[in-house]
Length: 625
Image 1 (cartoon, rainbow, N blue to C red):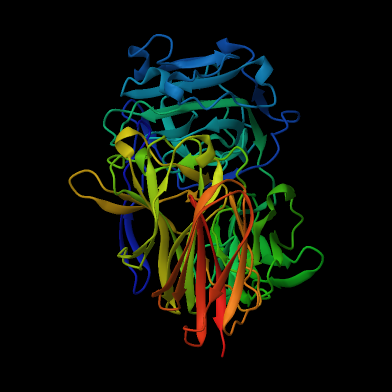
Image 2: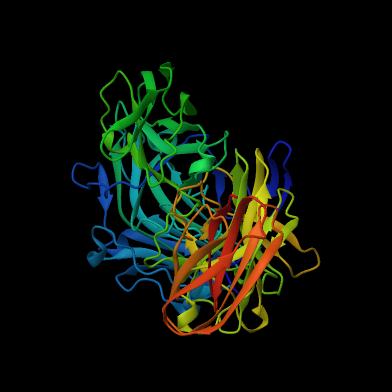
């Protein structure tokens, strides 16, 4: 498939250190057709409401195309598509790789776009420059503000600024984005408002030109000159505020520093959480007594409200990551939910408070589910090993990393299968150790039409004891890719501070694991504590807790079928050893019971798994005599 880059990773798990290559384009320090310098200034990118053009020093909404000049080597590829366009049509959806139109404030009047996907010349450097200079002589500190809609591939986006029409200073924008990511984070915020501090080049200057550049020349690796598109609108220059502290990013680290974020944590795996945030002073003045605060709410009351030590002096254009020294440990109560709100404050009155607060990191405590995804399957995207170079080969894998502060027993892996999966493809659940070695593999799941997709599928693995203080990978091993792909839901919204999701590329000369930046909907399920109901419904099957439990001689297991299915049950001890199999044969839809004779089982804890067609569920059985 197009628009895909292979990722590689080398992992030393004794210290959990990573050495990997990100799917970023390798950028040259200057654009070949410019005389340029690159400032060390920071830029601020926020998902804020559109910039207000009223009161701006200068603004343009692309309603008059003649105010802009188009140039660059992409012009030689195609006189229409190999060029910036201004109008209301927007980029095409050629080949299924369009990203739609920008939802900017004045999109109805026109906007600008470069359609890399339509051009696909393999060599694209396209510029869009103000036709006339802008007088900023009376404004010493200035920002460029604009709205954008962009998805990155093997390309980069820049703002260039000149105060003489000859020397151009480059200001990278979207530099932190990885391949196949949208601007605005996650699945994208359309539009995203960018604020770029152009004071070093434009402040106090009487002649200033602004240029937007889409940069993807043939010298880049990984499929240059055939990306998606970049769309911009509602451009303005405003005075930089005197005081403006910004909270750019906030992280919650579960279990250990850089440990990542869990949307669901099993009761038995609750551990201290640390909080930190990336701060940036985008104002003119030095700010004093700068403080990061983390406030955790359980939905009704604040259960944690702590701050970082105050930073006495925070100079203009300084960036720093600040941590809250106190940790928070959630209550190990099944179903308990929390939301963390981060905020930054300082002595001075902030003139742009919209970038002072981040509300996010919603998480809950479960009985048995470990999850990194947000669970929102509405309009969700998908991810498949087949999307990666040489991943369209049987044996490729997707996996999420889970850390266990306490010992546990893994019982099953849950996956949300999307309708992007091809008929005839299949996958099996796999549990891997911290070095990517396979521990166990479960039964195969076959994709065969609508009835097998657009749903959560829970697949059993032999109960496996997990060691405290150890990391494991829960994933899927795919097959049938010669005729298509297996695709699972992709959470591109939940933010992880480090690499916690991975893909194994089985094809090519050097099959290898590499990290991916979005989170596949793959969850790891463990045995719940005694007395806590476990997962009881899965598509065609409902499974009830055995009665009595604990059991002595016999116990009854009740279940319900939505559709006619072949049914059998397996019972395992805590080491994963198969102790008993009960074959029920073909069963009609409705309620049924299995009466188990456990007199021959030693005292202890067991798991019983009921299989009905492609569905299966597991609960726990205790034998006491």
